[in-house]
Amino acid sequence: MILIKKDFELQIMAEAGKILAQIMKNIAKQIKPGIKTIELDELAERLILESNSAPSFKGYDGFPNSLCVSINEEVVHGLPSNRVLKPGDMVSFDLGICYQGYQADMARTVVIGRPNKLQKKLVKVTKQALDAAIKYAKPGNHIGDIEWITQNIAESNGFNVVRELCGHGVGKTIHEEPQILNFGKRGTGPEIKPGMVFCIEPMVTAGDWQLEKAKDGFGYKTIDNSLACHFEDMIAITVKGPKILTR
Image (cartoon, rainbow, N blue to C red):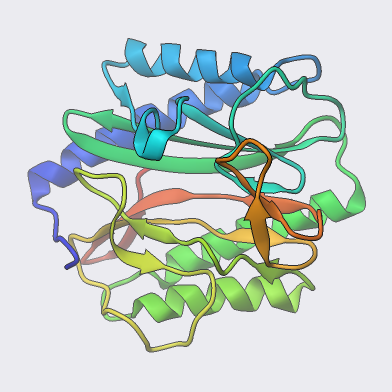
């Protein structure tokens, strides 16, 4: 069942999204050569606690950290470690917080230093897919419309979309209905209605879309070791259209 949020819930979630966006901005500033991914996790947890929030991912399905850090061929759920970031790394970082009983979730991808041609295009196209998908998230449309435009933009640019993972509804729990795939058909799936809140998260690969578990036991990586990119925003559906809560 897709839960419709009340006005007071939307207000809390908007505040949670604002807090999370600022935390992610501060983390992004520290993604530079020489830093260990575990140091980014430590920063994330400190900033979360200072905001009177709690980390959503820590302890979720046994995940031991607050921040997911996925590098190059890793798509999502990468485990922070003593790995040192270097120029040329494509770094996806995903974070969730719980604020006053409600969740917020978002992800970004950055390239350390000057991106090469492929990295630049992959980041650009994944951002375009997210922005277009958000525009399709309006009352009267269907979840399949979001899925279709995500797939269309990625594949028309020579990339593929991950099919084994998806976006999701969000509220008092981090994962609610509906599931939002990165591929689909227009006009299918649940109708989008005011009061819904969900996370749209294109996961786009430069090569094969199939995944396998990473060596850390938590993350997922492309099966052919091709580059992957991940962007995610949390949006609320209003009568006037989608409202992005994490920007």
